[in-house]
Length: 141
Picture 1: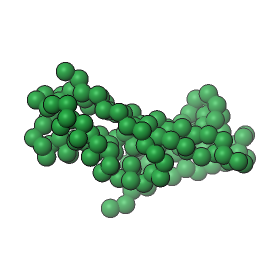
Picture 2: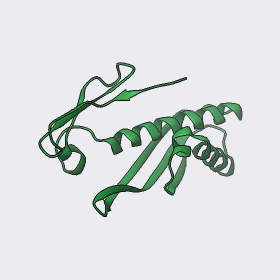
Picture 3: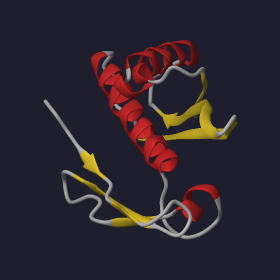
């Protein structure tokens, strides 16, 4: 199985502009610029796209493991926050903080935490990252 995204760019780094698209029509030529990445201008950036991909990947891993344990969640919400910092002449992603909040009928705290941790470790996007991934899991009652 292969999936792809593309990102054409026109112009120099600061004055140029680009767009991101996905193989599916989920994103089609969505704009991004230097200032949408490193400033507060409208548009997207690679780190927020990675965050969305990581959160979605985790949710699917978590849902699969909950199902294997015979739990059906009423609500699951995940967030993956990337920190990018200056690193010499460039920038580096220095950390990622993944969190999940869920309402899962019939599950106890220990089982919830165990399944959530296994989902984090088993998520293909988590496996791709070489930075420390902070993690928090909140079970709603």
